[in-house]
Length: 407
Image (cartoon, rainbow, N blue to C red):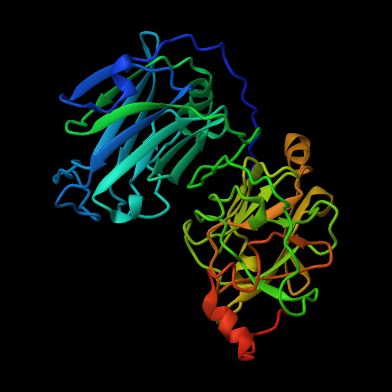
Protein backbone atom coordinates (compact mmCIF):
# COMPACT_ATOMS: atom_id res chain seq x y z
CA UNK A 1 0.00 0.00 0.00
CA UNK A 2 1.36 3.41 -1.04
CA UNK A 3 1.19 6.76 0.69
CA UNK A 4 0.91 9.55 -1.87
CA UNK A 5 2.08 12.93 -0.59
CA UNK A 6 1.74 16.34 -2.20
CA UNK A 7 4.62 18.69 -2.97
CA UNK A 8 4.38 21.99 -1.14
CA UNK A 9 6.43 24.95 -2.40
CA UNK A 10 7.61 27.30 0.27
CA UNK A 11 7.14 31.06 0.22
CA UNK A 12 9.26 33.39 2.27
CA UNK A 13 8.05 35.78 4.92
CA UNK A 14 9.01 39.40 5.30
CA UNK A 15 12.53 40.74 5.16
CA UNK A 16 14.56 40.17 8.31
CA UNK A 17 15.51 43.37 10.08
CA UNK A 18 17.17 42.09 13.28
CA UNK A 19 20.80 42.97 14.01
CA UNK A 20 23.59 40.60 14.94
CA UNK A 21 24.80 40.43 18.54
CA UNK A 22 28.31 41.99 18.34
CA UNK A 23 29.74 39.21 20.53
CA UNK A 24 29.09 36.70 17.72
CA UNK A 25 31.51 38.41 15.36
CA UNK A 26 34.22 36.34 17.03
CA UNK A 27 34.29 33.08 18.97
CA UNK A 28 32.31 33.39 22.19
CA UNK A 29 32.70 30.89 25.03
CA UNK A 30 29.48 29.37 26.36
CA UNK A 31 29.73 29.65 30.14
CA UNK A 32 26.27 28.54 31.33
CA UNK A 33 23.52 26.05 30.51
CA UNK A 34 21.50 28.77 28.77
CA UNK A 35 22.69 31.77 26.75
CA UNK A 36 20.87 33.74 24.06
CA UNK A 37 22.03 36.00 21.23
CA UNK A 38 20.46 38.25 18.61
CA UNK A 39 21.03 36.49 15.30
CA UNK A 40 19.13 36.92 11.99
CA UNK A 41 19.66 33.29 11.07
CA UNK A 42 19.05 33.67 7.34
CA UNK A 43 21.87 36.17 6.99
CA UNK A 44 24.45 34.23 8.99
CA UNK A 45 25.72 30.69 9.48
CA UNK A 46 25.79 29.65 13.13
CA UNK A 47 29.07 27.87 13.87
CA UNK A 48 29.78 25.79 16.99
CA UNK A 49 33.27 24.67 17.97
CA UNK A 50 33.43 21.76 20.40
CA UNK A 51 35.35 18.57 21.18
CA UNK A 52 34.45 14.93 21.53
CA UNK A 53 34.12 13.72 25.14
CA UNK A 54 36.91 11.43 26.29
CA UNK A 55 34.50 8.56 26.94
CA UNK A 56 31.27 7.92 25.08
CA UNK A 57 29.04 5.00 24.17
CA UNK A 58 27.74 4.77 20.59
CA UNK A 59 25.28 2.00 21.52
CA UNK A 60 23.81 2.82 24.96
CA UNK A 61 20.96 0.90 26.59
CA UNK A 62 17.59 2.58 26.13
CA UNK A 63 14.88 1.74 28.65
CA UNK A 64 12.89 3.27 31.48
CA UNK A 65 15.35 2.36 34.25
CA UNK A 66 18.63 3.37 32.58
CA UNK A 67 19.43 7.01 31.97
CA UNK A 68 21.45 7.53 28.80
CA UNK A 69 24.49 9.79 29.14
CA UNK A 70 23.79 12.80 26.90
CA UNK A 71 27.06 14.67 27.39
CA UNK A 72 27.34 14.58 23.60
CA UNK A 73 24.07 16.49 23.07
CA UNK A 74 23.79 20.14 21.96
CA UNK A 75 20.66 22.24 21.52
CA UNK A 76 19.78 25.51 19.78
CA UNK A 77 16.37 27.18 20.18
CA UNK A 78 15.08 29.58 17.53
CA UNK A 79 12.97 32.66 18.31
CA UNK A 80 10.77 34.89 16.20
CA UNK A 81 10.55 37.88 18.54
CA UNK A 82 9.55 36.53 21.99
CA UNK A 83 8.08 33.31 20.53
CA UNK A 84 10.10 30.13 20.28
CA UNK A 85 9.50 28.71 16.80
CA UNK A 86 12.11 25.95 16.56
CA UNK A 87 14.43 23.62 18.43
CA UNK A 88 17.47 21.89 16.92
CA UNK A 89 19.10 19.01 18.81
CA UNK A 90 22.20 17.16 17.67
CA UNK A 91 25.06 15.03 18.99
CA UNK A 92 28.81 15.15 18.60
CA UNK A 93 28.90 11.38 17.92
CA UNK A 94 27.15 9.00 15.54
CA UNK A 95 24.98 6.52 17.43
CA UNK A 96 24.70 2.99 16.08
CA UNK A 97 20.90 3.29 16.19
CA UNK A 98 21.01 6.60 14.36
CA UNK A 99 19.68 8.79 17.20
CA UNK A 100 21.83 11.67 16.01
CA UNK A 101 20.00 14.86 14.97
CA UNK A 102 16.45 16.17 15.31
CA UNK A 103 14.44 19.22 14.27
CA UNK A 104 11.51 19.24 16.67
CA UNK A 105 9.12 20.97 14.25
CA UNK A 106 9.92 18.66 11.30
CA UNK A 107 11.04 15.21 12.52
CA UNK A 108 9.03 12.59 14.39
CA UNK A 109 12.19 10.73 15.37
CA UNK A 110 15.90 11.39 15.46
CA UNK A 111 17.67 11.13 12.09
CA UNK A 112 20.97 9.37 11.46
CA UNK A 113 24.12 11.13 10.24
CA UNK A 114 25.73 10.01 7.00
CA UNK A 115 28.79 8.80 8.93
CA UNK A 116 30.74 9.60 12.08
CA UNK A 117 30.95 13.42 12.10
CA UNK A 118 34.19 15.28 11.42
CA UNK A 119 35.89 11.98 10.61
CA UNK A 120 36.02 11.13 14.32
CA UNK A 121 38.46 13.94 15.05
CA UNK A 122 38.56 15.32 18.60
CA UNK A 123 38.04 18.94 17.55
CA UNK A 124 34.78 19.58 15.70
CA UNK A 125 33.49 22.59 13.78
CA UNK A 126 29.71 22.41 13.33
CA UNK A 127 27.66 24.77 11.15
CA UNK A 128 23.89 25.33 10.99
CA UNK A 129 22.86 26.97 7.73
CA UNK A 130 19.33 28.20 6.96
CA UNK A 131 18.75 28.34 3.22
CA UNK A 132 15.61 29.61 1.55
CA UNK A 133 13.99 26.17 1.39
CA UNK A 134 15.91 24.00 3.82
CA UNK A 135 18.30 23.90 6.75
CA UNK A 136 21.60 22.02 6.82
CA UNK A 137 23.98 20.78 9.50
CA UNK A 138 27.58 20.13 8.56
CA UNK A 139 30.69 19.10 10.47
CA UNK A 140 34.03 20.24 9.08
CA UNK A 141 32.22 21.23 5.85
CA UNK A 142 30.69 17.76 5.34
CA UNK A 143 26.89 17.90 5.26
CA UNK A 144 25.50 15.38 7.76
CA UNK A 145 21.82 16.40 7.76
CA UNK A 146 19.43 18.34 5.56
CA UNK A 147 15.74 19.07 6.21
CA UNK A 148 13.44 20.76 3.72
CA UNK A 149 10.74 22.92 5.28
CA UNK A 150 8.23 21.55 2.77
CA UNK A 151 8.94 17.95 3.81
CA UNK A 152 8.02 17.68 7.50
CA UNK A 153 6.85 14.31 8.76
CA UNK A 154 3.13 13.59 8.53
CA UNK A 155 2.76 12.68 12.22
CA UNK A 156 1.74 15.22 14.90
CA UNK A 157 0.91 17.85 12.26
CA UNK A 158 4.62 18.34 11.61
CA UNK A 159 4.13 19.13 7.93
CA UNK A 160 2.50 22.45 8.80
CA UNK A 161 4.86 23.13 11.72
CA UNK A 162 7.88 22.54 9.50
CA UNK A 163 6.53 24.95 6.89
CA UNK A 164 5.91 27.50 9.62
CA UNK A 165 9.54 27.16 10.71
CA UNK A 166 10.62 27.94 7.16
CA UNK A 167 8.45 31.06 7.11
CA UNK A 168 9.50 32.35 10.54
CA UNK A 169 11.53 35.56 10.85
CA UNK A 170 14.12 34.12 13.22
CA UNK A 171 15.92 36.96 14.95
CA UNK A 172 17.35 35.36 18.11
CA UNK A 173 18.86 32.01 19.12
CA UNK A 174 19.42 30.41 22.52
CA UNK A 175 21.95 27.66 23.19
CA UNK A 176 21.46 25.00 25.86
CA UNK A 177 23.69 22.33 27.43
CA UNK A 178 26.77 23.60 25.58
CA UNK A 179 29.01 24.84 28.39
CA UNK A 180 32.63 24.91 27.24
CA UNK A 181 31.77 25.14 23.54
CA UNK A 182 32.36 28.23 21.40
CA UNK A 183 29.89 29.89 19.01
CA UNK A 184 30.11 32.58 16.35
CA UNK A 185 28.17 33.83 13.31
CA UNK A 186 29.64 33.91 9.80
CA UNK A 187 27.94 35.98 7.05
CA UNK A 188 25.98 33.84 4.61
CA UNK A 189 27.68 33.62 1.25
CA UNK A 190 25.69 34.34 -1.88
CA UNK A 191 25.02 30.88 -3.29
CA UNK A 192 22.65 29.31 -5.74
CA UNK A 193 20.18 27.07 -3.96
CA UNK A 194 17.73 24.42 -5.07
CA UNK A 195 14.42 26.13 -5.82
CA UNK A 196 12.05 23.25 -5.13
CA UNK A 197 11.69 20.35 -2.78
CA UNK A 198 14.38 17.97 -1.65
CA UNK A 199 14.79 15.20 0.87
CA UNK A 200 15.98 14.67 4.40
CA UNK A 201 19.09 12.75 4.96
CA UNK A 202 21.43 12.97 4.78
CA UNK A 203 20.49 14.00 2.46
CA UNK A 204 22.14 16.39 1.84
CA UNK A 205 22.84 19.16 -0.60
CA UNK A 206 25.81 21.39 -1.17
CA UNK A 207 24.91 24.59 -2.97
CA UNK A 208 28.01 25.44 -5.02
CA UNK A 209 27.74 24.82 -8.74
CA UNK A 210 30.54 24.13 -11.24
CA UNK A 211 31.07 26.72 -13.96
CA UNK A 212 32.76 24.64 -16.66
CA UNK A 213 31.32 22.19 -19.18
CA UNK A 214 29.04 19.58 -17.68
CA UNK A 215 29.99 16.62 -19.86
CA UNK A 216 33.23 14.72 -19.96
CA UNK A 217 36.12 14.85 -22.40
CA UNK A 218 36.56 11.59 -24.36
CA UNK A 219 37.37 8.71 -22.06
CA UNK A 220 40.63 6.80 -22.57
CA UNK A 221 40.26 3.71 -24.74
CA UNK A 222 37.22 2.63 -26.72
CA UNK A 223 33.86 3.83 -25.46
CA UNK A 224 30.78 1.99 -26.64
CA UNK A 225 27.16 2.24 -25.66
CA UNK A 226 25.88 -0.60 -23.51
CA UNK A 227 29.21 -0.35 -21.67
CA UNK A 228 28.77 -0.73 -17.92
CA UNK A 229 30.18 1.74 -15.43
CA UNK A 230 30.36 1.70 -11.64
CA UNK A 231 27.58 3.63 -9.89
CA UNK A 232 29.93 6.45 -8.86
CA UNK A 233 28.83 7.86 -5.50
CA UNK A 234 28.04 11.58 -5.73
CA UNK A 235 28.04 12.03 -1.94
CA UNK A 236 31.75 12.92 -1.75
CA UNK A 237 33.66 16.18 -1.19
CA UNK A 238 34.94 15.97 -4.78
CA UNK A 239 31.35 15.90 -6.05
CA UNK A 240 30.25 18.69 -3.70
CA UNK A 241 27.95 16.22 -1.94
CA UNK A 242 25.85 15.65 -5.07
CA UNK A 243 25.96 19.27 -6.27
CA UNK A 244 28.70 19.00 -8.94
CA UNK A 245 27.32 18.52 -12.46
CA UNK A 246 30.49 16.67 -13.47
CA UNK A 247 29.24 13.84 -11.24
CA UNK A 248 25.88 13.56 -13.01
CA UNK A 249 24.61 11.81 -16.13
CA UNK A 250 22.54 13.88 -18.56
CA UNK A 251 19.43 12.00 -19.75
CA UNK A 252 15.86 13.07 -20.44
CA UNK A 253 14.24 10.34 -18.37
CA UNK A 254 10.71 11.48 -19.19
CA UNK A 255 11.19 10.68 -22.89
CA UNK A 256 13.85 7.96 -22.65
CA UNK A 257 13.05 4.50 -24.01
CA UNK A 258 16.01 3.07 -22.08
CA UNK A 259 15.65 4.36 -18.54
CA UNK A 260 18.46 3.58 -16.10
CA UNK A 261 19.69 -0.03 -16.09
CA UNK A 262 21.41 -0.94 -12.84
CA UNK A 263 22.94 -4.08 -11.34
CA UNK A 264 23.06 -3.94 -7.54
CA UNK A 265 22.52 -5.85 -4.33
CA UNK A 266 18.98 -5.67 -2.99
CA UNK A 267 18.80 -5.58 0.79
CA UNK A 268 16.39 -5.11 3.66
CA UNK A 269 16.24 -1.96 5.77
CA UNK A 270 15.81 1.78 5.23
CA UNK A 271 19.59 2.30 5.26
CA UNK A 272 20.09 -0.26 2.46
CA UNK A 273 18.29 1.53 -0.36
CA UNK A 274 19.46 2.01 -3.92
CA UNK A 275 19.37 5.79 -4.30
CA UNK A 276 19.29 7.91 -7.48
CA UNK A 277 19.30 11.71 -7.24
CA UNK A 278 17.18 13.41 -9.91
CA UNK A 279 18.08 16.88 -11.23
CA UNK A 280 16.69 19.49 -13.57
CA UNK A 281 18.72 20.80 -16.52
CA UNK A 282 20.61 23.36 -14.41
CA UNK A 283 21.55 20.88 -11.69
CA UNK A 284 19.04 21.63 -8.93
CA UNK A 285 17.98 18.45 -7.15
CA UNK A 286 14.30 17.71 -7.64
CA UNK A 287 14.22 14.67 -5.38
CA UNK A 288 15.40 11.09 -5.01
CA UNK A 289 14.19 7.74 -6.28
CA UNK A 290 15.06 5.09 -3.68
CA UNK A 291 14.16 1.46 -3.35
CA UNK A 292 15.15 -1.81 -1.72
CA UNK A 293 13.45 -4.91 -0.39
CA UNK A 294 11.70 -2.89 2.32
CA UNK A 295 10.28 0.05 0.38
CA UNK A 296 10.00 2.25 -2.73
CA UNK A 297 10.20 6.05 -2.47
CA UNK A 298 10.04 9.08 -4.72
CA UNK A 299 10.61 12.27 -2.77
CA UNK A 300 7.38 14.10 -2.06
CA UNK A 301 5.18 11.75 -4.08
CA UNK A 302 5.52 8.01 -3.39
CA UNK A 303 6.16 5.97 -0.26
CA UNK A 304 5.34 2.26 -0.62
CA UNK A 305 6.21 -1.13 0.73
CA UNK A 306 8.01 -3.19 -1.90
CA UNK A 307 5.44 -5.62 -3.37
CA UNK A 308 6.07 -9.36 -2.79
CA UNK A 309 6.51 -10.13 -6.50
CA UNK A 310 9.32 -7.58 -6.75
CA UNK A 311 11.04 -8.93 -3.64
CA UNK A 312 10.87 -12.46 -5.05
CA UNK A 313 12.36 -11.35 -8.37
CA UNK A 314 15.77 -10.49 -6.92
CA UNK A 315 18.75 -12.67 -7.75
CA UNK A 316 19.26 -15.35 -5.06
CA UNK A 317 23.01 -14.64 -5.02
CA UNK A 318 24.95 -11.51 -5.86
CA UNK A 319 23.65 -8.59 -7.90
CA UNK A 320 20.18 -8.11 -9.38
CA UNK A 321 19.67 -6.38 -12.74
CA UNK A 322 16.81 -3.87 -12.77
CA UNK A 323 15.63 -0.86 -14.76
CA UNK A 324 14.20 2.41 -13.42
CA UNK A 325 12.02 4.22 -15.96
CA UNK A 326 10.12 7.51 -15.79
CA UNK A 327 8.91 7.63 -19.39
CA UNK A 328 5.77 9.72 -19.87
CA UNK A 329 5.84 10.34 -16.10
CA UNK A 330 5.01 6.71 -15.31
CA UNK A 331 7.44 5.36 -12.72
CA UNK A 332 8.37 1.74 -13.41
CA UNK A 333 10.75 -0.84 -11.99
CA UNK A 334 11.45 -3.68 -14.40
CA UNK A 335 13.33 -6.95 -13.93
CA UNK A 336 13.95 -9.23 -16.90
CA UNK A 337 11.84 -6.91 -19.08
CA UNK A 338 8.83 -7.47 -16.81
CA UNK A 339 7.21 -4.49 -15.09
CA UNK A 340 7.28 -5.33 -11.39
CA UNK A 341 6.11 -1.95 -10.06
CA UNK A 342 4.28 0.93 -11.74
CA UNK A 343 2.84 4.27 -10.60
CA UNK A 344 1.63 7.13 -12.76
CA UNK A 345 2.61 10.58 -11.51
CA UNK A 346 -0.23 13.08 -11.52
CA UNK A 347 -0.91 16.70 -10.64
CA UNK A 348 1.89 18.54 -8.88
CA UNK A 349 4.08 15.41 -8.83
CA UNK A 350 3.86 15.08 -12.61
CA UNK A 351 4.59 18.78 -13.09
CA UNK A 352 7.53 18.66 -10.67
CA UNK A 353 9.29 15.60 -12.08
CA UNK A 354 8.63 16.52 -15.72
CA UNK A 355 11.78 18.65 -15.37
CA UNK A 356 14.13 15.67 -14.75
CA UNK A 357 17.11 15.93 -17.11
CA UNK A 358 19.99 14.49 -15.08
CA UNK A 359 20.68 11.85 -12.47
CA UNK A 360 23.44 10.67 -10.14
CA UNK A 361 23.92 7.76 -7.75
CA UNK A 362 23.85 8.80 -4.10
CA UNK A 363 25.49 6.48 -1.58
CA UNK A 364 25.91 3.51 -3.93
CA UNK A 365 29.30 1.84 -4.18
CA UNK A 366 31.76 0.57 -6.79
CA UNK A 367 30.39 -2.95 -6.66
CA UNK A 368 27.15 -1.83 -8.33
CA UNK A 369 27.04 -1.03 -12.06
CA UNK A 370 24.90 0.83 -14.60
CA UNK A 371 24.69 0.72 -18.39
CA UNK A 372 25.70 3.66 -20.57
CA UNK A 373 22.89 4.20 -23.07
CA UNK A 374 22.84 6.15 -26.38
CA UNK A 375 20.75 8.95 -24.86
CA UNK A 376 23.16 9.55 -21.97
CA UNK A 377 26.00 12.04 -21.60
CA UNK A 378 28.30 11.29 -18.67
CA UNK A 379 29.99 13.94 -16.54
CA UNK A 380 33.77 14.16 -16.32
CA UNK A 381 33.87 12.47 -12.89
CA UNK A 382 31.98 9.41 -14.14
CA UNK A 383 34.39 6.95 -15.75
CA UNK A 384 35.48 3.33 -15.24
CA UNK A 385 37.39 4.27 -12.06
CA UNK A 386 34.97 6.93 -10.74
CA UNK A 387 37.94 9.32 -10.95
CA UNK A 388 40.14 6.91 -8.94
CA UNK A 389 37.48 6.19 -6.32
CA UNK A 390 37.18 2.63 -7.67
CA UNK A 391 40.79 1.70 -8.63
CA UNK A 392 40.34 -2.05 -8.08
CA UNK A 393 37.67 -2.19 -10.78
CA UNK A 394 39.95 -0.36 -13.18
CA UNK A 395 42.61 -3.04 -12.60
CA UNK A 396 40.03 -5.74 -13.21
CA UNK A 397 39.20 -4.15 -16.57
CA UNK A 398 42.89 -3.82 -17.41
CA UNK A 399 43.54 -7.53 -16.84
CA UNK A 400 40.38 -8.65 -18.58
CA UNK A 401 38.47 -9.93 -15.58
CA UNK A 402 34.98 -10.79 -16.81
CA UNK A 403 31.94 -9.44 -15.03
CA UNK A 404 28.51 -10.98 -15.01
CA UNK A 405 26.57 -9.47 -17.94
CA UNK A 406 23.31 -7.58 -17.51
CA UNK A 407 20.34 -9.84 -17.98
